[in-house]
Amino acid sequence: MLILGIESSCDETAAAVLRDGRFILSNVIASQVAVHKKYGGVVPELASRHHLENIVPIVNAALQEAGLAQHALDGIAVTQGPGLVGSLLVGVNYAKALSFSLNKPLVAVNHLEGHIYSVPLELARSEIERGVPLTDWSELFPALCLIVSGGHTSLYWVQDLGHDETQAGRFELVGRTRDDAAGEAFDKVAKLLHLGYPGGPVIDRLSKKGDPHAIEFPVSKISDGKLDFSFSGIKTAVLRYVQTHLQKEVDQMSARRNEENFHDHLPQPVYDLIASFQKTAIEMLFDKTSKAAELRRPRSILVSGGVACNSLLRSRFHEGFKSKNSIPVYFPSPILSTDNAAMIAAAGYPRLKAGRYAGLSLNADVHLKLHE
Ligand code: KG4
Ligand code: ZN
Image (cartoon, rainbow, N blue to C red; front, top):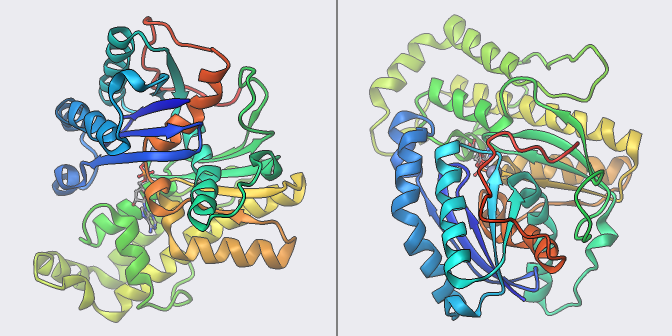
């Protein structure tokens, strides 16, 4: 079964073709990072305008790379939400028009469900590459799934994937951020330090130059016993630290920020600040996930979303869960961690097989929920 996935929920226009829900034939992404860089974050109006420009060439590129004509497709999967309304509408309307003109079924996918699918999809990708038998995905479940990106920080208990019934009861929200998403905290700290956008990759790299124990930042305390996250406290603590101890250095950095190799010649206390921030943010993610794992005893832990690219997060989770209770942790490769359409096609596949089609009345849903 050949399925075309379309993703446009935020600032990436993406299309991919998958065979039987796990063989990636193509995976094409047009990133808008260069467009939004100078604003230090995604500008919704610009994002939808660029999706409009990109959607046709990106879908065509995905079909071409897969070596397929449009009529060879068995169906189309599109991200319905959550996301930015103007961005989502471009993908949803294009997918509806394509479905109508080709007379091929359309299925709607929750973006977060896509992120969860990106992890077993990565497993299949690496198994295909190594020529080893494919793992039955149900062996990974029930699983704890942490989705950490610029827009989301949520921890789900997932019973299983790929069943044909509706998603009712399969996803339980165990914890979520009460304020900023983790990626947003990385982006805001980078902005404060004039390090550019997106902040996560540069903070990850520069943290290696600093002492993560130099500054003790407060760890957010959620007092009602819930496994929720909070990242606004650490963001404010970094701001206060800069104002009190490093304002002169940071002002000088602002003046030098366009110099070549600027990132590699920062004052040592700034590297220490970056490393200490990263360590605290990752520890907060590990701590809640680890508490949830103790309570629920999952068969695996799946981490996805842009922040899942973070090198400290990967080593902390691998080591932490290996030494603690020997739970395997899985991450997608960076290309499947950040927003992509292969994960949307993978999540849409069981729905397409089961004939749970979306009609042409499908609309974008900005606040679409995964759980009940
Ligand atoms: O999943 P994604 O591409 O888009 C959504 O937000 O949905 O995630 C982007 C986020 C940004 O906030 C970016 O700073 C963060 O992921 N990110 C990272 C790293 N790479 C990307 N955060 C920490 N460490 C990284 N290596
Ligand atoms: Zn995402």
